[in-house]
Length: 129
Image (cartoon, rainbow, N blue to C red; front, side, top):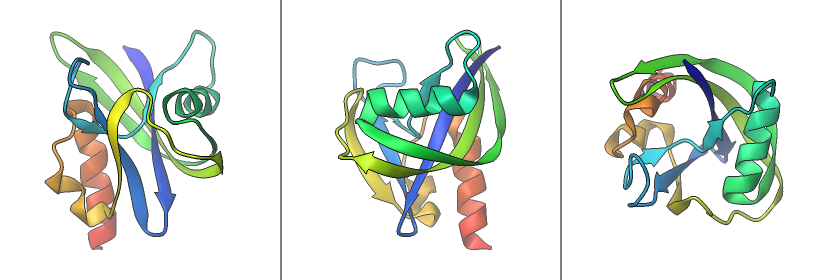
């Protein structure tokens, strides 16, 4: 099972979500930015690298939110989710066609990739309590 990271980038009570380009796997669906770890790479370091590559910003990686396994006939991953904040830079989507700052309670209204859905449920439940 491949390890993949996801950042819940928070600012002003909202979280950053990104829509995958139409030609990509899961094209047109929303996700939390992040990506695959390189061999031997620590999850936090890999997540910082991926966010810099995908969005052009440097981030501070915060608390671990959880590990979310996803297994289908086409994909087998463990999504490692962390809270994060932007330290420097200006957001510019490279791998996505749109980015949005959304309130956690509104996340279930977006169509997310299957691997991200348990994280959406966690964040929406936290916001509702």
